[in-house]
Amino acid sequence: MNVLVIGCGKVGSTLCNRLSAQGHDVSVINSNQEQFSNLSPEFNGYTTLGVAIDQDVLRRAGIENCDALAAVTSDDNMNLMVAQLAKEFFHVPRVFARVNDPKKNDVFKDLGLETICPTNLTVSLLCTALHEDSAEAVNVGNHTILMYEIDVPKDFVGKRVSEIDFEEDEVLVAVEHADRSVSRMFLTNYEILKGDRFIIAKFAG
Image (cartoon, rainbow, N blue to C red; front, side, top):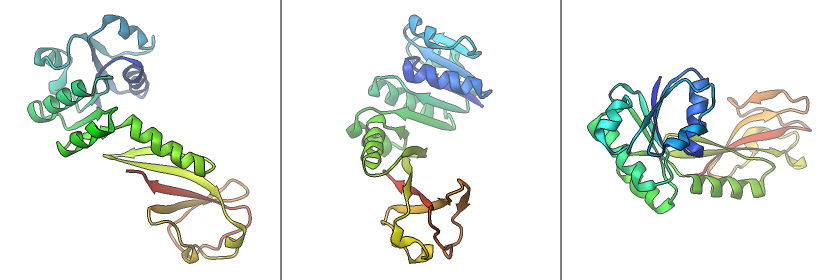
């Protein structure tokens, strides 16, 4: 996959390094030459110095042939402008924008852009982690799903999954047993055993 990344700060460079390591063709634009030093020695993609809202800069970086674009600078307005250009003018198939301000995140979504809001993600993850043993976040389109594991209450042992009332926004994905094996929950007639732990998915917004 050909991916164009806008921004080579901590987020952008880490994204570039990981995508490159996974075998993707990566091109990155940044307005500060020094920040390209954040890229790992193993990064085998392309770097373009310039302002990403300049169409000539975008063309030099390969936007006309990219499969996806991720605008991840620390400037929400820059990310919005680049994402709109990519989506509406260059017709990039998949466009993602990092949005730090939750209020602006709603504006981006109203414009039909796929967004990742670190602020909302962090708050949702912390709120869940404070109440659960562990929590990890997974982004699906414009949504964030929190995954976490909890010990099965003693009074659940011997009951069927179909007898358990979960919260409205919770879905039981799997059960981890005492021997660390995992049963995926395609059926609801599973009988809960001592030592089981629930693996739950929760919609976070």
